[in-house]
Image (cartoon, rainbow, N blue to C red; front, side, top):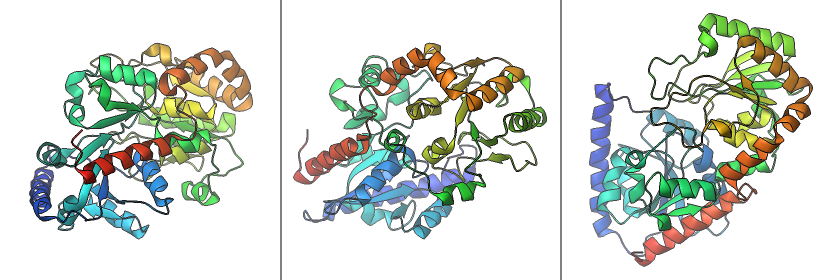
Length: 395
């Protein structure tokens, strides 16, 4: 659940959730030593690195711990239960025994009321952030995560960034690769049901439009080049007609993109309705973005990425800078139309033109860790954390 700080009901929900966390921490005082340990996954959605970790755990025949997703969104919890996914809800009463058994929490964002458990319990915390960032951060942005026992990052270059710029202790930053990239590296097939759910015709090219949100610039338009919603939709329709393609519009979780009624060639796929970003990337032949971290995952598919050359909305500058763009820079609607057609008709030409930048940025973002084994490495780190928690190891 995305917490709206302006909504009094959300504050009440947080307060009730906090009470359940406190009850769970008190219950830990009475738990038996031989209790089977539990790992809780916590984030906005069960997607990305958390979903990859969940799927890897489900394949283990002799797992030594149980695993659940923890959410403060009751509607989302019901949706997960309908898929037979183990889920625990705050402020639900079952959160108490879950926290009593909990050995480790893996998060990909903030903690909300779980910060109480970080501060006042022996539960071990690991972070696997939700993207390789263009956005600039400093140590103040990660005061909570710096207290975690481990942070799992995608490459040695990101490890250095976390230590030197974000203020993390070197021994707490582990290079594992990002678990969610395994399906992209392996080029796993997307089932036909996924195409059907999106209303996509598999035989026709797909262009994915996925910009970042307003970030630190509240006046920033989500539509590029000064377009409004209507003219933006007209541009997408022109692209679909000229390139004989289908267009998916992916809004960030913190943003809303809409353009009124769409044609059959244009589909809006917001985060809350379609949380599995990797599947969207897999079915897309071309990505159009600006400063979104989604571009770094997409480069692993070795397909054209077009960068909208618009001002970055980051108050603290960059983590990875503008030189980490590895495709054509688009400065106008007409340029976008032309480049999309080129990317669909002759993708190899665009890739060849930007091959050096592509290889360099891949090395920065992933190093040698985009090898299809990142989930296994993350799971190995998790197993070690659970063993340490159950043995009473304080290291």
